[in-house]
Length: 247
Image (cartoon, rainbow, N blue to C red; front, side, top):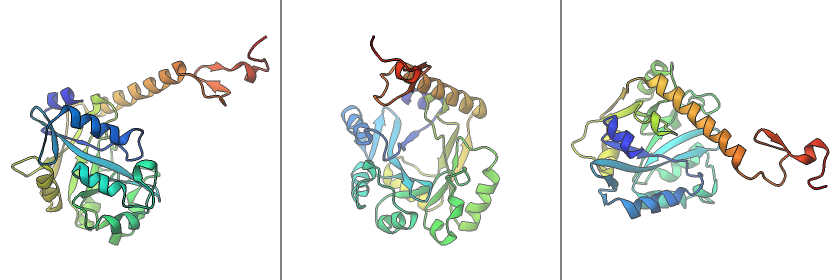
């Protein structure tokens, strides 16, 4: 991931794994043991690794946050149960509890089916700090720009990369002289942002998705089946064929 980010010319890489993802905190524990931290950002040579997370909203939406690791830990514990344990706040709950935190709140994939931010009231959406142009969503850019203007929110962009091939297909342009979390948060909140699109974006996105799907399929073939499975990978278990496991 770091090599690809440097190859496509990025100055920084926002790390926004889902809070409820497996071993979420292990990611930051590992990074802390490998890379030095300055101004709240991990540094892989001259590439900034910016801490963040994606929060699942109960009504069916996602909010991206970026903050120092200590503030992410504070955010995780703000709710009745931890976000990293799978708790999903409502949008209003999330906004109310994070108003005073030192972080930036970005509305993700505004028009993606089943995860649309557009279903929420304008008064709530205006409390976000920016809207995201996602690397996976094509054909909605103009609608997003119109919505951002109507809400008075700036635009940022993200690759939404689940594979290194997709890194940088969409990326944010921040008008700042330094890369550190205080500067990144301030720049986004002030609206000094834009976005750009990398070369061969549709091809890279489709290729990354194909590789991801193939990898998932191969894992299902070669990992041990769960005890209750009647089908696993391409094979059917003996019970499903009316035969016992032995004899």
